[in-house]
Length: 334
Image (cartoon, rainbow, N blue to C red; front, side, top):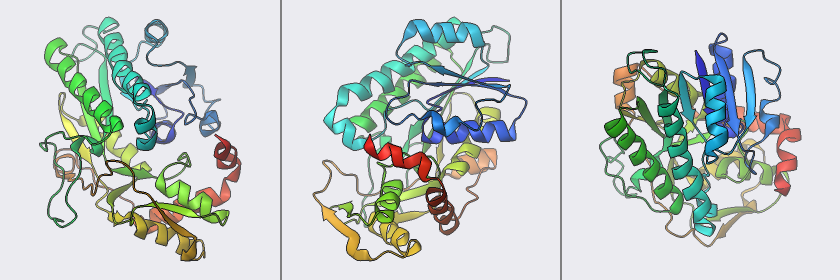
C-alpha cells in the first residue's frame, strides 16, 4: 500500500510516520511537509534512510507541486495531518489558517480526484482521510460532566483555527457527496507525547519547568481538556483507514479529562519543581471551557480503545523531553 502523509514532519504526523513504518513495514510512506516553524526534519531523522520512506518539501496549497507528487507516487491513501493548529496564532493571523487548512485540503482532494485509479478498490478512487479536531464542536459547560461530544454534536466553533478545521471538514463531506470521493474524518481530543512543538500546554510547561522559568497559565486554569496519548491516536487512524466506513466521522478520545492547572501541577510534581513557578496570565480570547470526546462509535465499530493511561503517558512524555534536549532546545528560539 502507498500512503501519502501530509504534515508528516509535525507532531502527530511525525508520530504517525514512525508508527506506520514500525507496524506496516511493507507499506510505502511518502511524507509531505512545507517545514514551517512547527515542521522539523529532525523528527524524521531515524527513518530518512528507510527504503520505503521518502520526503517531499511541498506546501499543500501549491497545486502544481501537489499534482506532480501524486503523479509520481500514485498513492492508495492520503492522510491529511497538514494544518496550522495553534489557537493563539490563529487569532493573530487568521488568513494563514484559512489558506492551509481549507484551501490546502481542497487542493489535496482535487488531486485525489484527478489521479484516481479507477478500479483500484471498491470506491474507485484514492482514499482521503482528514485528521480534524474536537475543537470544531465548540465547548461544553464545566458544570455538566455528563455531556460529551459525539459525531452528531453540531459544529460550533470559537476561534479562527477551529473555524478553519470545521470548514475543511464540511468541504471533505461535500466532496464525498458531490464527487463520490472516498473519505473518512477523525476528530481527536488534545494529543500529548514526543516531538510536540514547545508552544502547546504540556511541552511548554515541561521545557519551562526544566529551565525554572515562569509557567504561564490562562485565566484560573480551570479549563478542562481530554488528553490522548499520541500513539493511541495513531492506532485509531490506522484502524479507520483499514476498517472505517467510507463517508463516516469518528471521534477519537482519551477518556482523560483534566483541568489545565492540574496538568501543570502533575508536570511540576514529576520534575520535582515547586508550584511557585505557576504564573496566571490574562485569559485567551474566546477560550473554550471544556472538551470531552465520546469515542463509543470507534470503539463499537472498529474495536479501538486508548491503551495508555495518563499517569503512564505523561511520565513517558516527560522522560522523552529530558532525554531529547537536542530536539527541542533549538525550537525555543523560533
